[in-house]
Image 1 (tube, rainbow, N blue to C red):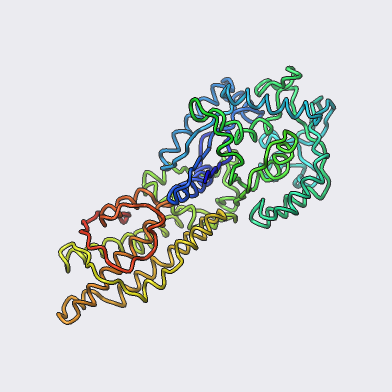
Image 2 (tube, rainbow, N blue to C red):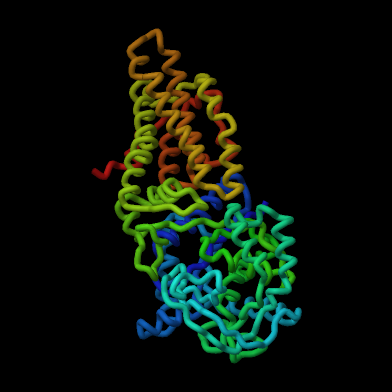
Length: 500
């Protein structure tokens, strides 16, 4: 079945930070998992290059918006292989192919009677590129996200008749209760709708850095109309010579941060309804990564550089930490101290040491051959249904919860080593059969958790499965086998070397 997952597209007014890596890795986890299950996957990410925040950042640096976009888009694109991310396409909204498709869809919305010319006056945050409602204004008439004073703006704009979609949106939320998740975010979006929708500025007349409005070239489209459409436009040109829209649209999952909930959960479905385009299946909203109690934000200057973490600990360690430390969907604090603790206690000790000592015992006691005997039925029973549970959680875009299910079995295997004490069994000739069962069961348990961990720590998984001589990532083979495989294992360097 086709499976389409997207990240938000990232503003190019500064370079990437850990918050961008977080959402991107989440989408990659889902994409890799679904490929393991044999699905036809398309994974999209990219950069949002128009709008006032980019123009202002470029002006501050004395360069053109296009120069700034080219410079920072390259940094975001370079981040993808560093994160070991398997995106199928990287869209840039300055791409002429995207611009043409935006104009086609927006012209359709205009032709359908959903626009009009008017004058807007209200409080505006230039960093959010957003006009704020009264209930979105913080103390001191400031932006609650960026903590900067809001600007009073008055200008002639084209408007989108958002108010006419009040009832259709209420019906959408009633008929599809899982359309926005988690529930707290769904309730937040629904509360915004229920408070009464007002028509929305569709264009800006004061700026030129944007997509020109086809029916009024003196205006450019308000950046959110341009940006949101990337999820739809990219499919028409992402693969040379093909239009993938009919194959992959509607998207299975848009992954977004809670700061852009209103745009995705209210404006976006109304736009699609106005254009006569089918809505995506799910919007999954994650919380903030907090540093010193504040949302990590380049404009606030409180960011962790993912490249620094990768240089010291490796990409897999970063990928694991992001979904172990903070439950996806919730706010959570991150720190270098917390990272080091997770690395040492869980990756190096729980998992890395389990793999190394299990392989070492097979080499020491059975000359590297995994005993081809029945595995421990009692241990196998503790793995019953694990692949199905993990799949069900990832089908709901709950990567942290799925990882916890896997890690419970990693810890169970460590306890099994201590319970069975293979080093003692090896000294007792009459315990040879029990030692064979123990080693076969441990190898099989390590293989199972490793296959399931592939979306999270793919580089380490591939190394370990190769050492087990069982390289397949096929999800259909992720169940705990009743028989040892009789394969020959190879010694392996520590997957997560101690750093101290």
